[in-house]
Amino acid sequence: MNRNSDYTIVYVFGPEQCEEKYFNDEILSREAGEWVKIGETSIHGYIDSITDEIIRKEAIKRIKQESRTGIPVTSVLYDVFIFPYKSHTDDVIRMILCNDIYDIENSKQINKELEEDKIPAGKEFVYGVRRRNIKFAVQSYDHDLIANSYNAEDADLQIKILAKICYCNNVILNKEDNSSQEKNTELLKRKPRMDLDLVFVGEDDFVVVLTDGCGNEIYDENQNVISAKYIGGNLFECRGEKGHSSFLAKKYLNMYGGKNMTTVNGNEYWTYNGQKLTSLRKN
Image (cartoon, rainbow, N blue to C red; front, side, top):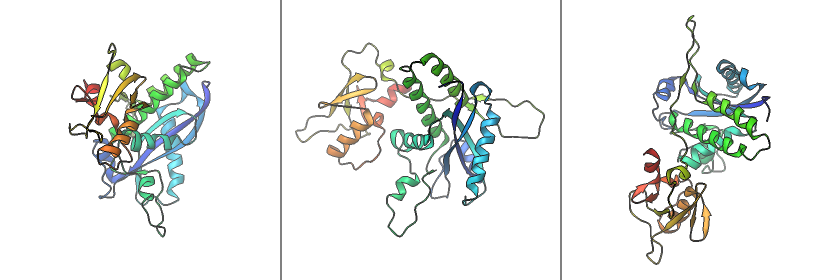
């Protein structure tokens, strides 16, 4: 990675009539015909000279191309984010948003349930989402990029560039206006992805218990509670198997909890001393 390189812009847009609701952080309802579309485009340049305005213009340019394929209502750009260039970054953001963290409807999920004679919707559409969900998914991806860069040969340079990118992704873009007033930017306060190495620093034997999300413990066929031991790096070991909280929660909730879940936020189901892991993060 070098400073004068290619970057991916991920943009979020939706119906004009939903704009106020989106920025008020209200849930966009599929039943009411509300949605966001998450797509991507690319840009080449010097990272320190890529401004909010440039990112926004590139996103709008790409969206106007999409409009030729039939966006059903007048739409506006909601948010834009920038990352090191990699194709299908928008797919990754949607996966984090709809699968890894939140259980949110998207067209890809809905298309799987269609009958053969039905025409699927574009996979970029997401329903039942609110702005904070999207921002959290983006920050989670930022976190992963920085973590992965530490093992690179040019780690110092990569981290400096990623720090600049993370800063860009924390800026709310103001709507364009005709006034002569200087445009201001406002930093978003976003909750970081849970880092259990920090939460449980000093703990020697950190064991979590699986619940149904309402405080009721999950037992196996022998009436033994399902528990897992934290082994570091946000990984757990449960019955000889290592994995993240979401993977293990989904497996054992489906196996013993009477569930049929395809996506799980594991930190809502694993508890420590009676507290959900999500509650521990908030504290």
